[in-house]
Image 1 (cartoon, rainbow, N blue to C red):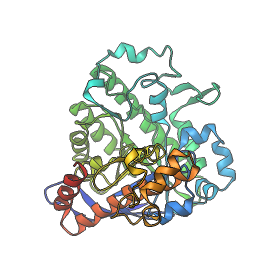
Image 2: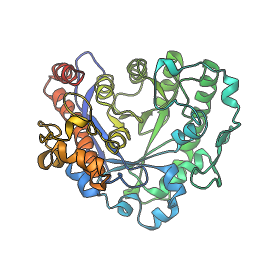
Image 3: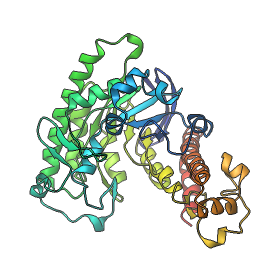
Image 4: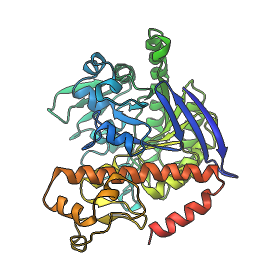
Length: 401
């Protein structure tokens, strides 16, 4: 893997670059389309490529459970298994540990509002009763959300799974913490993440030594630390000294803290290596992340909300199920070049959703992914043209109306 910076934002951390992987080039900043189970729901790989996506991320936890990482390896790896010709990434399963543990039965997700931050004690985060996972120094025991069967992930196990899946870029196994966790627990989890990072690197290099040179995978380390500036900076300093090919910024964020948190980290991480903000991808967040030095984003939100009838437009989100769209024969977004907008009306999409037709999710997902993927591409061009701040203001002023 090779990363080259083409242009930087003046007096800011943002930049435009080119990330070269074994299976293709990614022009950054870029939005990474999420295909959790080696599939972007309701879409074919050809449709994903046609809407402008450069790279897909799949989920190690889900593919381990179904159909199994060893089966994917027998199929020729993730790319061949899902018929995707471009670069791929897999995450480590760390966020799924969070979902089964700290977030289990709670409303906290990747983005939390201040009102949800109740400040429980570190003791409550060590109490795993009623949850589907239990964490210890060596790894994590968890129960499958599919059938309740028992499993165990360690840093080494996560790396082995990701090697079997064969993505171009993989992630170290970390402990993703809740913004609810207090300082004491964030510090404890942070230190455990660093110890696990070293184990991931060691096992990655051990497995890598057995591979032909043309099959080498890039490994990204993950920065944690919650909402605490000193912990985030400490994590960035420690992880940046390890021999990672790039870096992920992990954790569950408070919306208002996210941009400053990313800035703290990216001021420290090596400038010459790529940075990925895990699980973030709303239009407003893309501008803030890019301005603060993020090169890659992934998020399930564009396709998830699409399947429920929520669609992006340049003037903000719309709910296509609103009655006013029943007789609206204009495109979803008249300025959009996606297949759905070029061929179908709001009235038709409204009909599909009301009739519960499968095509509804397909067309809506094409539109939302096109919107986000190409918004990031436009932001990239604005950096190269020296017009980032102008484009940011024009877009957000209209989008927030």
